[in-house]
Image 1 (tube, each protein chain N blue to C red):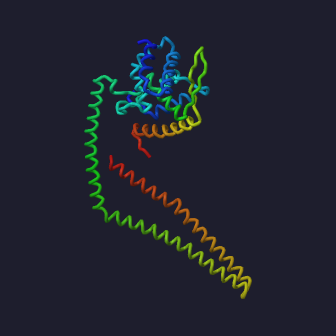
Image 2: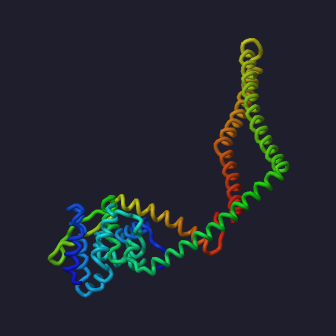
Image 3: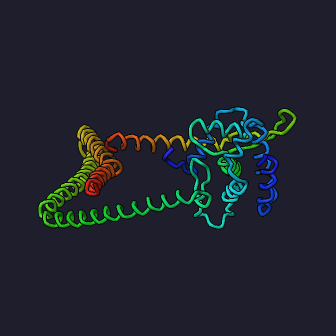
Length: 107
Length: 225
């Protein structure tokens, strides 16, 4: 990948991945899901998840799974609103870049 | 390095952050390894590179990193040039220098173009100055004309109404009714003109200003090219 993924885009991708799981999802799975779209290293997502949790965009709860506690992340209403904002901004941004790259004129 | 060793070193590196943050981070990586399963352990250890790098990533986000210029978010995670190989760093610096010099040339070209455009604008000012003055005069004339028309219609309506009422008292009732009716009609037209004025001020004028702004921007944009 030649393009860097900025902090906002990374937040948006993580919110989109967590949003898909109604019952919540966990760190390892989130990393694997994000990796279907962009290359991220295993250490990338912890700070992102922690920050989103502090910003009340994600909530966490622990659930027992196979004799141990697993931490689940779930999207909050605020997180959903934030994701909606990111979606709109992304459509705007990506369509402009696409137009530019294909040699079109911006309105 | 084994997973237990990795976790032990990470814990030691995180002693200078708050108890809560340390517990959160350690439990995250603990369950990360558990969820990944033993078969993935080696791959993950390799990708995490070192406990030092993971600790730096965690601290950077807590605003603890002393020099925030050292790293940035990339698709490979929080990247720090100090952890890159020397050759990569050198390559990056060279690219930066090239970019800087080409940008400088571009800026010079742009300044020249702007000077040229200003000279042309001054030389042709009699033409577009006249046009602009004409346009301004037309808009001003139309505005004053419309407002004056509305005012005149209101006054006419008022006069007709007054005469009509006085006809009820002294003259014929029929003429009185006719005049009051005429006054109402005139006022109706005056109201229509007023509504048009309000619409023009609220909608049409901002729209024209916007269109002019767009035109100016596209001209400026083409000059920039």
